[in-house]
Image (tube, rainbow, N blue to C red; front, side):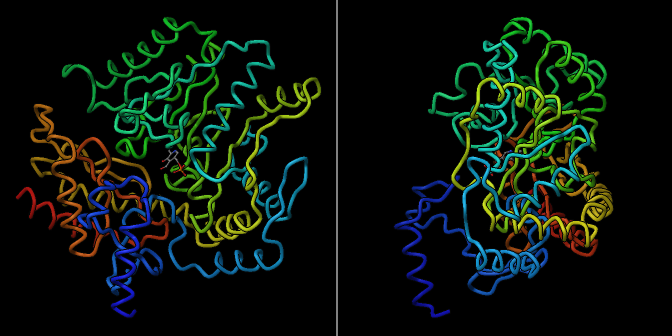
Length: 457
Ligand code: PLP
């Protein structure tokens, strides 16, 4: 590239481009420059200066099939030439969207029925909330409006999905969460409210807290509970053993629907096709996005269970049109990307690879860092792994949020490896493309170990 163009690009970027989740003043001043990425292959990205980085987070845990896959790029180009777009309102359709709907439902848990397509994880969660409300309205319980989710959950950045999100940084100064969006405790033993609670006592406490909230609010005012089968952005936190079965029992008893947000866990990341299968959830709705197209094109899905669908179908006989849809719902070019992605997930054995390489990766992390005095926990499932750092894990003394891990990830970046500091804590996350090799996992672990030594000794 012409260095002049490089300079212009940086200047135009600072002057014209409002970046998502960015310190905008620092960016405008050039303090936070970011990388301008120009290419990638497998688990590696290349920036415009020719620097190569091993991407331990698949961008935002979304490029699951890896970078530079001609199969997906060609499918997108072919579809754009054939038919770039026609809408799917009023029962219209396009071939790739219909084929992809079938492929999604062939892979989804057996009790699920249909998929509604949107564009992002945020909008898919909002669709699921509206469909949960619609379900209760049709069944004669229109007062069931409240949504319960969990502190530290990430469900998106919209007004409703941002209200479901349980990270205070996403609520600050916005008046969020909206009234009627409630949060229970993060289901993580490290974050138990009392030091002396063992795992069994903590699980009892979590379930009692949920029951108490439902009783206090009134069971017949609550529409749905939303949760990530394994929490992602809030810290890559797998559920405590037995947690989902007990939550599900409480919800069923009170007629509350379950939304499983599988934007991260869907399509293989845990080593199973869906986190709901992996952790034994039986959701009424599943939210998917990211891995559905490996982020080659924006596409999300709200997957609906048979029991909810039966009510929606009967209700439609009585009430007619369901007025909910986005212009780009079921976009044919995005659907073509989805078909090519799911074909690759199958042909390359990416779900099994996430399981095998994930197990290898986690063991290597334990071996390298398990004995470090500031490592409180190494955890995760498949290829979503985290290392949490504390000042003194024995006494549960935390470092001030975002003080240590951002330095570690910066030291890793200087060595050519990307890991992600997860918000509002000191948690380092790995969620690489599902095509990761053991050699690449080794390099990530070695680089992390060097960075930890540099920052913490
Ligand atoms: N749900 C979960 C679990 C997520 O991790 C994310 C994004 O990271 C979202 C929803 C929101 O998806 P999007 O950014 O596509 O709106």
